[in-house]
Image (cartoon, rainbow, N blue to C red):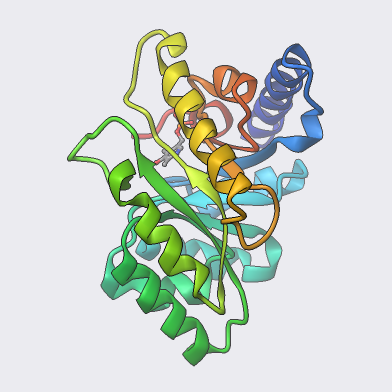
Length: 232
Ligand SMILES: *Cc1c(COP(=O)(O)O)cnc(C)c1O
């Protein structure tokens, strides 16, 4: 198994490098987040041994066990799934970055808990629902500005970027307009000085469509299947 994950990682890194070069970008601008959801801590350890440092989990409860096995300092932990309000405290305790901010209530709660827990800074991204898919989390574009204003007033939460999860298409080219849209929103927010730190990360692109996402400016790709294999 060890060799599988290591060679899968090599292949994914090659895909990232090629896509970045094709787009005239520095591959180092694209951070790989290995999505370890449903996979055991042993798989995470294999990836760490292959010099992977950032992991994505979509469920707080599942991540809890894994992070305590690996250790919080052993890697950088990203929450990429919907965060329920009753899991906010655990999320603050466990994660370094939360990609799935989608309501002012959640922002207020996380900000308060960061203060209570002595967590000085927590990096967050707003998840934007570009397709108006009711079944997925994320904030509608019409609600985005309000959320940005709320984040601006936070002391502990640092608004660092945007995340999107476009609908699945057989042809990854069909996801391109969604990636372009997210980038356009990011550019506008950046010009307005909306981000607390940095130029605005773009968390977009997965196993199936990471090349297109990188061509459209992704700075974080969230890749599970291509690294850890199919999920059950
Ligand atoms: C599962 C998941 C991924 C990874 O998907 P793969 O197709 O396995 O690469 C990325 N982002 C989110 C939000 C996910 O839930």
